[in-house]
Image 1: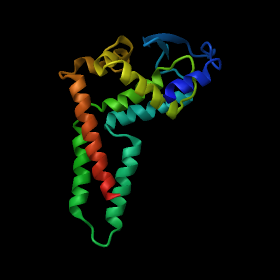
Image 2: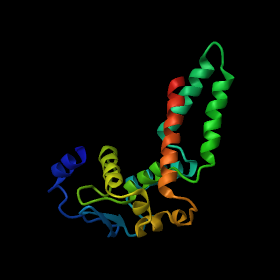
Image 3: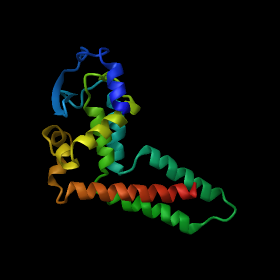
Image 4: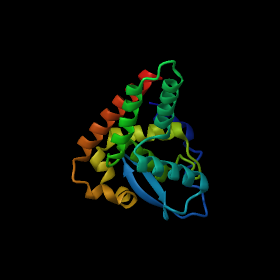
Length: 190
C-alpha cells in the first residue's frame, strides 16, 4: 500500500508537528492515526489556503477542475469538427445543468477535508496531491461516509451536512456513479 510506504518513509521527518505562526489542534483519530487542523480554518499558511479556496469553489460548483478541463476539451473537439454535433453539445450542457442541482459532490468534500486535516507526517504548510489521495483512500477504507462526515470537526467545517434529509451513503454512491457516467460520456467525445 503506497500510503503505508509514504508514511514509513516520512517517519522521523516530522516526529512532531513543526512550529508555525498558526495554532494547530488535534481534530480526530482514525485507526490509530491522529489528524490535526489549524485552530482557525480561515487563518492558515497561504499554500493550504489557496488549495482550500480551490476546493471550496469546486464544492460550490459540484465539479472538479480536472472534469472542467475534460469538458472544455470535449466542447473544443466538437466545435472544431467539420460537422458540429449539436446533440453532443446538448448532452454536455445537460450534464453541467444537472450537476448544479446536486446538493454536493462527496468526493470533492473528501478533497477539502484532506486539505484542512493533516497528520504528523505531512508538512502542514504545503499540500501533496499524491499523499492526500492515499489519505482519502485510507479514510474511506476505515470509516463509513456517514461516520467520517458526521464527526464533530467535519460538521464544523461543513455544517450543511447535518441538515441533509438524505442518507449520505446512498447519496455518495449515486453521485459517484453519476460522476463515472459523466466522465465516460465526456471521454467518449475527447
